[in-house]
Image (cartoon, rainbow, N blue to C red; front, side, top):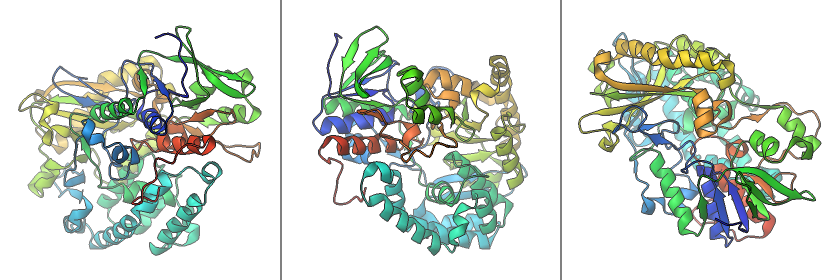
Length: 534
């Protein structure tokens, strides 16, 4: 490709970058996406990690935002190959002593969820049912909070109205205003009495990156209640959703350039003029949106000496982890796990997301504290998925592919040699633990296995420290009036990745970045729909 000129350049072909690019193109701009790897998707990554024929999602696993994601619906991604399955039994925990499992179903099967929780506590079943009903009644406002830029960047009253609705919800749930600052753990312990229910809620909280011990009431509502039990899975693996996103962008006229890493963002008089690629080519554009993390964007691509005092302090206080750092075990299996708890309720064997390795809430709490405290957890408990129970295309006929999530310390917490040791031992330790819960999960049932640790995720997917949210700002002391997230202090430069609007496969950062760019450049509001408040 010779040197080129675009109206807008997007750095990185992750799902957020593709979202921003597709909307920009639909608004009439000439758009180029420059991706350092050979394919798009970022964390929406699926590959034959163990042996050929077994497909494993190495990062993003469940699609909890499908019902709300503007990108999915505005660009009709199913027409480009995105297909979704929503299992009925959504979240479950099995027990080694053969106790009944606790299973949370999709909202349509509220009675089944009530019955499962009530085995341990009728009080908990009643509270969860009531709280979930009230939260889901306001789900459009929760989605609007996610898919609306903050007030200082949206230049509208929408964000304020959403905040008001969420405060109303908080009061409807029976909480006091000051309790918004309570941590999710305190709120969970206040609401639920059984150790089984607390264990599920603790793990559900951290799945979405909310800090169990230092988060707040908003994290509790979103992570523990709203997103619990509304998960979809992508047929063929999560990379099929990424491919559909790329196809939609191509359909809008976006140029996708692979193996084309950007090494420099070019500026003149504090205004973006384009980018320089690794091979030396200069690509001109007045608008540049970066899907990379802030450290890469500002320190590597712009340079410390060119940054404002505000940006330098923000970067100096930027922190990665510990909440959003995962390890991904993958197992190729002859047969799926058959849990002891299935004798009491067979639904656990067909549960989409199954928590394995914990007998009570305290064990989950200890696990989280160890991972957040830069230690590899002593008990190798995990959240697990066996997608082939619903989608046989992800393994050879009659076989099964498992994915899981361990929570680990960030990549730099251990040396490369120490991570080598974790890679070589942790899956085996988990398998030994797994067999206590599902006796058929022996070494003979395993065809092959592999573990990706945060060090691998940093190198392979480009998530610094293995942090799927690209980090977050720490304390600020300058008192700068505007805490830029999407819009930056450099004219024409925007952030459209996870660091601006959160991790997860929501496409919210990409969507919000487009809104801010459209606001600054007078572009058509192509996102507006009569049936959507965001």
